Image 1 (cartoon, helix red, strand yellow):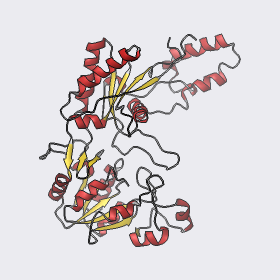
Image 2 (cartoon, rainbow, N blue to C red):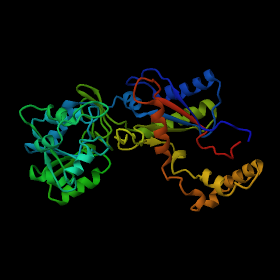
Image 3 (tube, rainbow, N blue to C red):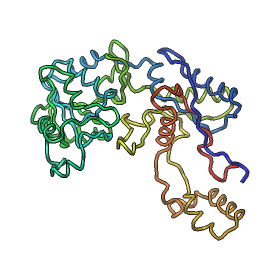
Length: 394
């Protein structure tokens, strides 16, 4: 074995990106500068990841809460909006709820329990069992929830989200319920905003079949430009983040032209075909807080063609434990490399068992998100090298 380095991941520091910046040039030029400054070569099938936030910032993809309220008032005609299954988040949903309050309509908020869609818990599941509450059947009012469970601050943020959401409106304009059947909201209103992310299509269908007159999702709000110019025709408010006290940054649009433009510029500058993706939240679960990180509608909203599909891999451990254990080191290496070179013929065999099928952009997007983080590292661009190499690659 002559090569001892496999996959390498580098966070690339970038200048502060502002609206109107030429992100294609900035990203490509930074990758070339990093390779020259740090003394590493660029290769075909290297991968460049760009966090969605700087793409949205460069294109000025922002909306004000007034614009969200205006859109909601155009879609909902009655005096009450039912909001179904939002996630518990200061950054993600609180400002959207604040905008809905600005419509001057009553809000009936149905929260899923014992946790929201991405794993933020509203109660201790052990106590839930002790109380013999059935989350598939039982609906709790806010008063019942408080009587049974008291205050339930988030283990990391210390925020009581039920209390925080309630205080976004005065004079009892927000009624909070806990339940897992979206049709319960129809007891209060037939105009519904579906606020969950990954199961939104099913929730919409359940409500429409049950007789709801007006059903929209977060993906149906801010799909067309208003005064500020911000919009996302595919995802609407899904993937939005708090930018200021009265502004939301939307998930970026037109991502494909960015990734293809960066790939072309890198090809012009280096002669290499480098893959490019835009990434948001990674798809992983925190083992302590039980939070599934993916609050964005997808891990990667845009990526170049070479990142399509799923990995074709053999289970290294299985081969080592079964086919190689009686061989000398040199013979074992030779057999393993030969198996890898011919792995196309092994598809579906026991040699691939345990290699969990995941899409390449989801895996790479999660890797990039973990690398750049969401704090002050200042590396919104990530370079991944050797990701497509394997043990047989010299």
